[in-house]
Structures are given as structure tokens and as C-alpha cells.
Image (cartoon, rainbow, N blue to C red):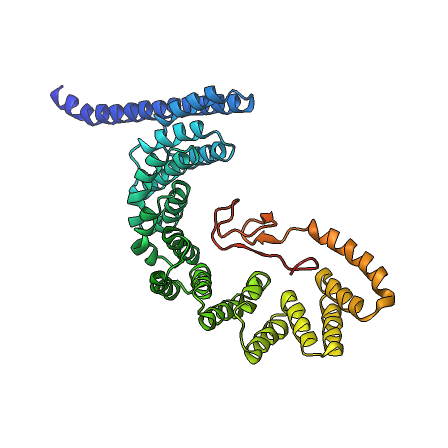
Length: 379
């Protein structure tokens, strides 16, 4: 009889293991059914515009199942884009409390910081973003949001202190932003003592226009016309899209005839710039070459139809013919009325349009992206 009991022990153990396994599996199935039920309820609340109830239901589900993090991130980002920052914050704060892998936890921390920044809670956003600039995979994005935050609060010193971290990235936009922030911090340069700091900024940030522009403007105000013209010319050769604004400033530096002609020829022939075409035609007129000026405008109009080139040709013909002057004056007036309503600048990043220049785009908050427009109405 005792031997029989020993023989039955393995059978009892196997039965116990089997029943226990079935019990665990049954619990798992029951939990999954509850999760599905709660998730369905949450989605139903969303579809019926009962968002507060939906969030409560879905946040409760987080305590049971953390495997659907991406779904919650997408939902929170949707709320943030809609401007429902409080809802996005609630979801991201709940996610931030979960024990998750380090990289995933840092990503959620970054998203929560973006919520705080969008809601105007800058102190909280800064506190979360500051540690993330030490993480390679988040450094550049965290820096961009920190820079944006400090621009909003005009805390130039804090932004400039990020110089070392920005140097560790390959982001041109961040370096252009830092160059402009240094200029903002410096204020409007007006004394000889500010010449050297501007030269250092121009050398440190060759990809930015602002430091060189401020340097040229300061040199001009100090009667250093040769230096001012040299810097303006450098910018124009590198960034011909700024010709519409900077060419007049360069002309005020009273360059010698050869240097001025070479600059205009370069911008007109190599870069096909409208403002340069018009300025070159004007220079030819000053030299007494009326026919050459007219032919230049006609040739450029055939190659590149443009209202402003047409207007310059009208002005030239008006000066040549007294008989046609009255008719041409009327046409010129119509052209002026048309051009007065056209925008002059456009942001190459977001498409924002305006009639006045900005170093910082009011729409997308990017530096040096608002440029003179090109095309049939362009300059």
C-alpha cells in the first residue's frame, strides 16, 4: 500500500502543476478581457466627445497594462496639437510615473516638457529639459526647445550658456540661433568697443548673417566705409537672396566704380538677381549707356519675366520719350498700386508672409528664415 502511495505522488504533482497552469492562464485571459473592455469603453467615450471620462478610463488601464505606451503617446500628442494641454499633461505625467526602460522614460520626460512649454509652464519645462541635453539621442531636440523657451522669456544669458552643448551637435539652425541671441544680448552696436566682439561672433558663426550685418552697419556708422562695403559684399556673394535689402546699404558705402560694377555683374549674371539687374541698368544709365541699360532690361525680362523689371523698363522709356510719357505714367501708376499690395518677404521654413523683415520668424520661431521673395513679383 505504501509503495502505491509513492507511485501516485508524481501523478498528484503533475495534476497540481496542470491545474495551476490552467488557473494562471484563466487569470491572464480574464485580465486581457478586462483590458479590452476598459480600452473599448475609453475609445467609446472618445468617440462620443466625453474626453474627460475617456482619459480617466484609459489612465486607469495604465495601472494594469503598460505595453501600449505608444498608443498613449499618440493620444497625448493629439491633445497637445489641439491645444488641450491639460489633458496631454495628465497622460504624460501618468506615463512618467511608470517604471520603464531608461530611454523610453527619457522620451516621455521630453514629451511632458513640451506639454509644459506649450502651456506656458516654463519653469517646469526647463527643469525637465535641462538633464536631457546630456543624452545623445535627445540632445538636439531638447536644445531647440530650451532655446525657444529662453527666447520667449528673453533670458539671453541662459541661452548663451548652452554654447558648449550646441557645439556638440551638427545643427546649423541652433548655431544660427545662438549667433542671433548673442547679437540680441549685445544690443544695437554703436561704439568702437563693440567692433571686436562682433568680429569674433562673425568668425565663430560664419553660417549666420546677423553678426556680419551688425558689423557692417557699425563700421558704416563709424565712417569705416571700406570695411562696411567689404562685409556687405561678402554677405551678398554668399547669400544673394538678401540683395533686395543689402544692396542699397552697400551702395551707401560709396565704393569705387570697379568694385561696385564687379559686385553688380556677379549678382546679375551669376545669381540672376532682380535687384541686381535693376541696379546694373541704373549704373549703365549713369555712365551714359542708355541703349545698353535698355537692352539689359529687355534681355533679362525675356529670360525671367518679372513685374519690377518691367516697371524699370517703363521708367527708362518714360524718360526717353516725352510723347509716351503721359501714357507710361498712367501704366506705371497701375503697376505701383499692384506692387504696393504684394508681400515682400516669406519664411522658407513655414511659409509665413509679411511686408517687413524679421530676424526671427513670428510664426515658426526660426532665425534668419524670413527672406525677400523671388518669382514674378520678387525683388
